[in-house]
Image 1 (cartoon, rainbow, N blue to C red):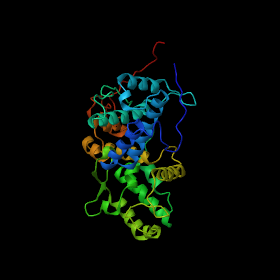
Image 2 (image 1 turned 180 degrees about the horizontal axis):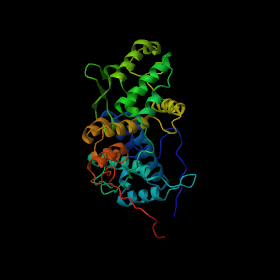
Image 3 (image 1 turned 135 degrees about the vertical axis):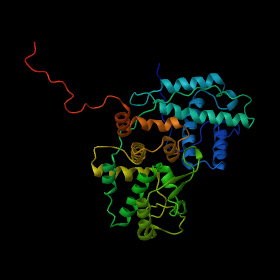
Length: 341
């Protein structure tokens, strides 16, 4: 049996009994405030809020308004709801979407239990759907990546900025949200490193950056960035024509546009550079542990997906180690005369 639920309104309006300080909605607000106090990124807080709102809306429609009214059975009902839910086009929610909607539930109830709001965590035994490990749909070859990098018109302020952005993506393989948060002081030219603030999971890390990318960043800083600053300069590295930080949406659109112009036959945006850089480095012999550190993966198993797209390295290893070598000239048998049919 499938279920349907009207989509939530675009605005972040209160949900449920907002006048009750013990309501699900008000406890959600306290939980989000706690996350902000722990310096979780705005993107993480916003995403967690979106998925918690889905749950609170679902609970409110069933007359459940307080945390104490939720037990393991209610959590399991919500899991079944996500499994049977159908979007307006009739398609089910993907495994990844269901996974994303359940993670904040577990964190939220664990927090309420720790705070003494709940005596028992109703989501303690919640099993998350197993995420499939998909191969990247496409990766650039080195030649294709260079083609995309050559598209921006570097004789203009915006083109010079965009070339520096593309070079940074290609050299460092950082995520789009990580790039939007880069500040000028995060670029260590002398060491050839970039400091990434609060990557996935809220973890900081250093990543190497190549000399060419540094040269384009320097050209952007010297010739373009000062023309984009408006009012107080907060030190954000890549800024818009209005002087503010680039949003992830704007950055996605920008990179996607250059990829389309390059006409490589491959679709994608910022993450396409991340996948491509990882694959090219692995093809060139980079150790998987170093690649894991570069990409900021918590688990080596996440990095191992690139071993499946690193065809060049696979062929090289196969050719070097497989005993079935190509025979020397003259080693093939020569069959003379007409053979029976």
